[in-house]
Image 1 (cartoon, helix red, strand yellow):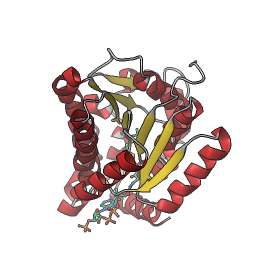
Image 2: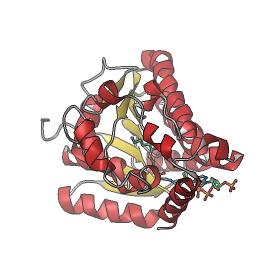
Image 3: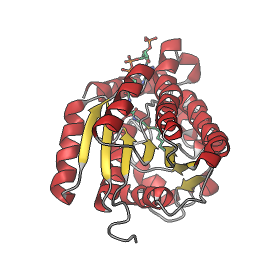
Length: 289
Ligand code: HXC
């Protein structure tokens, strides 16, 4: 789909780059010649991911421990990359946190657990990288991973829906504010692309949900779920260095699912107290693993 060396000379930071969708995008860009910088909270996971990329592509790949909830930590890591490696050319805001819960059950801490990562943390990274581009009068490209519920809303994931909608607004706003500085921002709104991190927290196997992956596949107009290659290819297209006129767009990548079926998780209306307790316990064990 792409020229082999499309990303030669490009240096891309991917938050949450060690696993799931972040790793899938890193893999695609590395395969096209990019130098990739994977950030995440768990250094051991990043080191494994870096080793895998180097073994597969012989590429330049680096891991940096980073908790994007800390603006100070973000500034340090961005500064370190600039000093040790050189200016970034692109940023992928992929790191996220989420779990399903009845909204009336959420404590303030539970709301912050999600919004501090998705809403605040993503802003900190975008601002830190944007400041460096502006100070150096350099062009740059930002890709933020949102989700189709920025359009539909989504029951039982309200802190995520609110935060992701904020990122959608950030994308549109900064596309205009920073466009004259040759910094462009776009977003992908993926549908269901199963990953361990998301499935364990959003689709715990409680009542009537055991065969939900199959059902979601059948409900999708394309009769399949998304893959890492799907999002990797779209990320590579959006961030391609020649693609300088694509700005301020949120592109849905879901096989037409939101058009056909609308919001996710409406089936959870049928869950009772026991189901919610079980979902919470399963999400917590996912945190521990
Ligand atoms: C209700 C919960 C809860 C749950 C935690 N809390 N889990 N409440 N249901 N399942 C509450 C706790 O009781 C606590 O409040 C507060 O939240 C913080 O709890 P912690 O255990 O300290 O949470 P923390 O360690 O911060 O972990 C939460 C997390 C974690 C940050 C969200 O799950 C995480 O790191 N996730 C990263 C990976 C991830 O989530 N991936 C999925 C992304 S999917 P109290 O009041 O008791 O102190 C996505 C959208 C994809 O973003 C869309 C696909 C279609």
